[in-house]
Picture 1: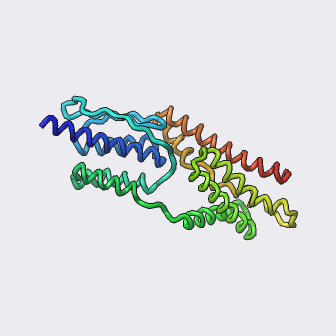
Picture 2: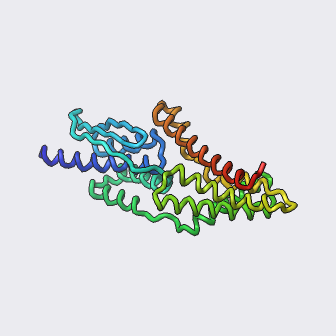
Picture 3: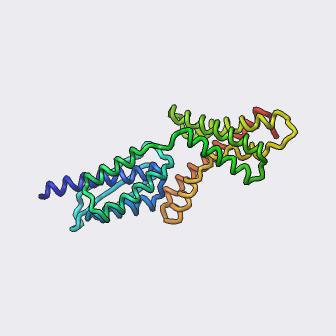
Length: 257
């Protein structure tokens, strides 16, 4: 019986570590990761001790008698933003509590969530392009500027996606996306047409703004997760620097003031 319990604890600990790593790599805040993992551990009768670093999750489980039954650590290869994964795992933690899922059912459902396909690439490009046009309109851009911003955003995002596929450094990917987008918009400024294109040039790179890392930085600091908050804040600042360097490079190429 003890051997069976030990095997169950190891299996559940492995699942729980996967949950933490998937949430961390999908852009969840530290508090959300800890709450979700603790909810699942309580559901299956374990007392969790969780430590979340910027790129790893450590877990120790104790049974009802507070005896240690599992210790493990897992790292994440990279981090991005995937709200579908975050919300799906959060719902799964509640479903496991309400429907008394077995460990195998929990593992199968977690694998299904991770395997869910992303939106088609064309849909993503068009949606982000429209969002860029909306930003341009918000800042006072006219119809022609909105069209230019749409094209710049689509081309910039396409180049960034291709750079990510080639496994370039994340900051280089952002720099390349910023450079291509600003070059596209800056070409119309450099053309010398008697039309104001400054709004298009300024908003063509807004799709690269690291909004989620900045929000997580703030929430982590407020919740007392100082190390993770600082790391995410510095990471967001590095992305902002890459965006600025892309804009600056385009301005130097076109000799814009």
